[in-house]
Length: 97
Image (cartoon, rainbow, N blue to C red; front, side):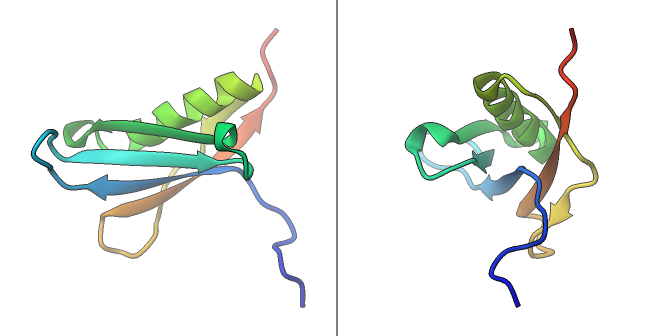
C-alpha cells in the first residue's frame, strides 16, 4: 500500500459561500500547487455566474503564473452531493506557438 495515488492532475475546488453583510452569495475557487503562499490561486464570482466560472477564473490565474495552457475537464465532481462543493480536474494542453 502506498501513501499517494499512482498519478494525479491539478484541480480546482469550488465551494459555495452564503451572503454576508457586505457581499451576496458567491462561488469560491481554490487551486493549491504547493506549500508556498504564492502557489495558492483563488477566485470568487457572484452566485449567478456559477461554479464553472469560479473554477475557470482560478485556472486562468494559475495558468498565467506557471506559463501553462490549462483547461478544465468537465464534468465537475460533486464533493458531497449537496450542490455546495465541486472539484474540477485540470488538463495541461500543449502551449500554442
